Amino acid sequence: MKSNTISNISVYPECNAYIAKGFITTDMSTLKIYNKKEKKNISNFSIKFFIFAFLIWILQCSNTWSSFRSWNYKNDSKHISNLGAKRSLAESEDVEK
Image (cartoon, rainbow, N blue to C red; front, side, top):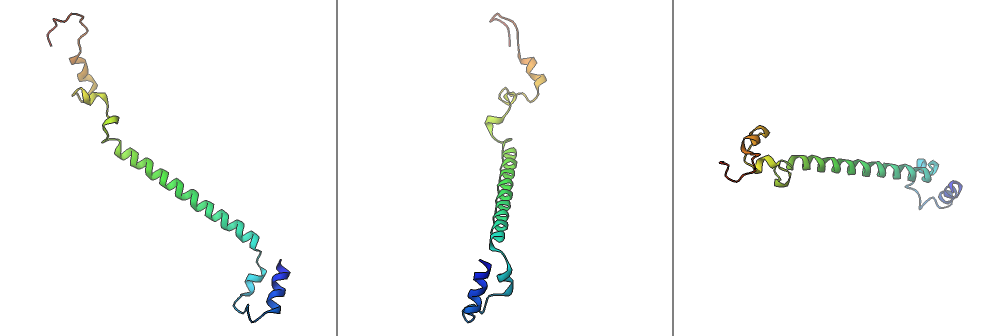
């Protein structure tokens, strides 16, 4: 392919006057491989970045969602030690609250 490119440029020099000499000596197959690797690296980085940002966003918002709140807040007590005072292990119904 390289010799074919050189012969085309030498046969029709007026059409290919803008082509640099460095273009003739480079192998396009290796450039395509490096270009694919670069695109793959950029896409991997962007996917990892957005997943990381999404996880940070979940951690930030989890404090405000009611489904993630502890059951201690539903009982109007802020500490686990206060829950013991509201419990009674007696079986009779006439126990005063």
